[in-house]
Length: 260
Image 1 (cartoon, rainbow, N blue to C red):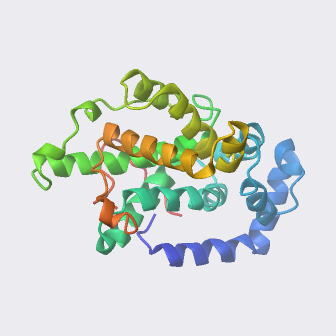
Image 2: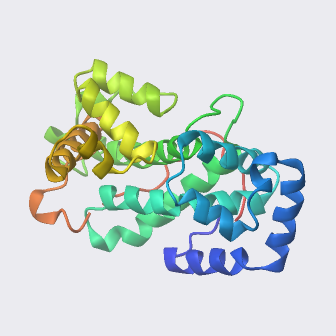
């Protein structure tokens, strides 16, 4: 895809969302996909995905779209549109220098688009959105590690534990992080439930009879340790409101020329 600013991409996706062409394509898909049949339009699909459905229901509607994405760019764009909130959340965690925002977003969008168009539903049928975002984050962090090894960042910031990349899905990553001691099992469950399964943090706090802020801080600390374990430089405390990393998609492997 072309490296376009985020706001321009969002405007283009919004225009397509209300277009007759996409509505017609969506109606055609719905005839063959029972999971989509109950949704009246592409906009209804996005509203459903952003209403915090169960992981099973979320996967049920994403699976037929991402399965079509390899040959149907319209389906891929709809998946990308659905993942934008997750990409924004990821960007906030990776951004350190506000001047690098456009470069970071170009990298994240290119990587996410490639993952969407090449995603294997057969190999990873569950947690589709989380796995695409995880793959996107890996590509950005790989570039950061390359910059560190090249001397761009102080060598003492290189995290030895992150040298081994965890392949697989979100569950595999969190199991490896727990085994390595980066997070506890309960912290991994907290991140999994609230970030990937869509359970509101307030519900977790209420279920465990803990103050909301205490649970929020525990998740923040766990996520910082996960980023360090993955090889990302911790954001200085004074810069937490200006999140990033110097991220361009590292050119490893086959990259098909697939435009949005």
